[in-house]
Length: 97
Image (cartoon, helix red, strand yellow):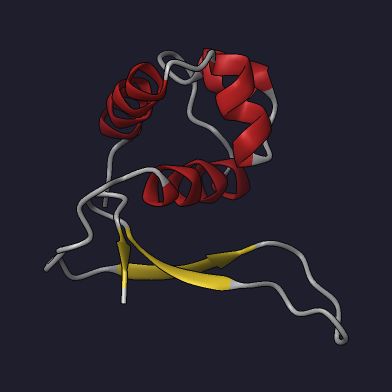
């Protein structure tokens, strides 16, 4: 499983590469800016962790993950409009097929 420290470092690297603020990253991920700013000292909720992991997967160029431990993530949908689900690696945060 990807540790909170590893996730935070990966998010920071992706954020810098894209030239965006933490506030923008949080908005794009669907979580609050305070959740992201607290990460170095306080773990996010499972829901926020999965949202941030999902954001990272969308902005990670390499999808050649061979790790075990995957999770399906997606938004909230309805019966008429189900969410798009993606498979995310819990170790590296990459989207896998």
